[in-house]
Image (tube, rainbow, N blue to C red):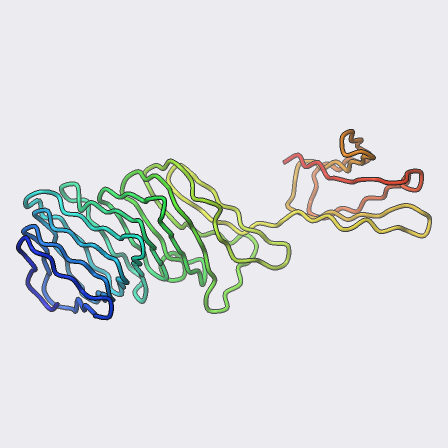
Amino acid sequence: WTGGGIAGGGTLTVGASANLLLSPGDDRALYGGATLNNNGTALATLANTLVFSSSATFNNNGLFILQSDFNFLYDNGGSRPSFNNNVGGTIRRNTSTGEVKFLGDYGGILFQNSGTLDLQSGALRLDSLATINSTSSIKFALKGTAPGTEAPQLNFGGGITFNGALSVALTNNYSPLLGATYVLMNHAGSTGTFTTPALPSLNNNLAWKASYTGTQLILKVVQTYSLTTPAKQGDGTYAISFSGPAAASIQFQVSTDLVSWETIQSVDNFSGTQAFIDADAQQYQKRFYRILIIP
């Protein structure tokens, strides 16, 4: 599709084994009530604008690859058009590091996602009215912390209700360090949360922490808490080591029934690692341990 428009009240379908190429050139247009169904593979390398108007509809049931930076625009002609990424459909953002934008002019194109948004580079920005349905799967491929070039983003011009599944993968042998922060999404306000995110495992007692702020969804690498297995010493006492993020205070507690707990040692201004000794352990047939953390 090198130029011009697709119009009329009919339907054009790209078959499951077919390809649609939106190559560089002039603006393209979908208008006049036309419907374009992609059941195969669509590849966009254009550098201008894909114009929608007059109740036009784009149904993505296959793979739509967004390799270049361009805009989807509603030109205020006729009734609002729509773009539907349906169940089984995938929108993949890769190659370029800029933004593909669904512009919000005149309210923008109605964007519905029920399929997969596969974000590998750059950003996808939805300034138009967007809906993320429960069948949605949103994927981020991270190879560093730099927004766009190494950490792709999904941005919303307005508010959004989070729904469906969220997953993150590490690429290019990337290994995150303690404190690494990724702004996955920017928005004007949100409700809801994603189901338990699928996140890659980390080494060196590191873990992921997801934060839903008023305007962002942020993923951060934090240190996990670790308590070693109690080790019996030569004098009958038991030694335990605890490590984790700094805290105002921690309390080493013991119990014989997992109901009643006694603090036998407190440490203020915990800085990351602390060894504990249970000097009375030999007096009991069984003994349980826990750490109470006061942030």
